[in-house]
Length: 358
Image 1 (cartoon, helix red, strand yellow):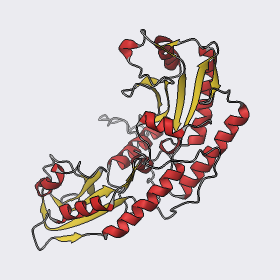
Image 2 (tube, rainbow, N blue to C red):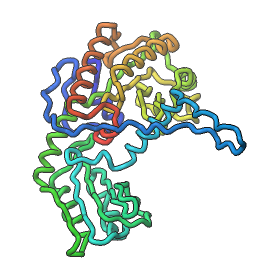
Image 3 (cartoon, one colour):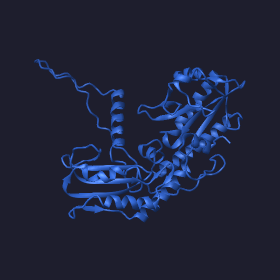
Image 4 (cartoon, rainbow, N blue to C red):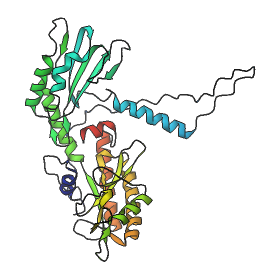
């Protein structure tokens, strides 16, 4: 009863189609797929922090050593670049059609796809081989560049499930009609095999999709004012986001865990002083969180501190106190999920994981 998965997922409006077994009472299923390509990132380029050029006859000063802060910024910039590019496209996660052009062309030839890109229910990524730089890059509808080839990818899986084969067929037919020049080469994968891969990947994702909740219920059942919640969240570096919950964010702006109302009431700045709630819930979305075990430990510590501030107890969804044994059991199950995802080559919190569990 500690993890009411379906309730949390409905609150997030990101639930899978299938029912999921409670992880505390059912052993995780065997991996449905272990052939997903590794989601890796190259080491960031170690750019040097150069001093301004000296124009006098003095010798140039030595290059300043790289500080940890500079290195962190470089790694962050490299990760953002990878996430915004085409490096994540792979046959195991996307249905990819490639058009190799006889002569470089602009994005005008893709107009039919731009107009219908929302018809498939899953994300479409368009990448082009820049005719000047000879590098693959994400293509924008307003681009004025010319490309020697295009990769048009329909994502196979997201949190609501696998893409239906019928939509793969429609996507194939639409993309195949984009080029009317016989000299152009179109590489079209077999739809049935892509649909089978989508189902296997979806089955794997279902087995690891968990959201952990720790409820804080006031001991005397008093209401907690929104202003009090906002002040406590500020002390712990949470920020109120557009979804009506307070989020603790990492350096890239990704949520580590969040705090929402047990009453399903959205927090808004202009109403914080008007209403109270019966309790709050700290939530950790395991697949979307880097190092989920470490951040679960952090969430538990925050929950204990907040419990003192709110004069509350940490309880499950049956409003029974969660003791240390229960927390240890939850932690062990997160270890299992993290290990399973890692062996499946979808690292929790990675850009690929955020695509598949969006």
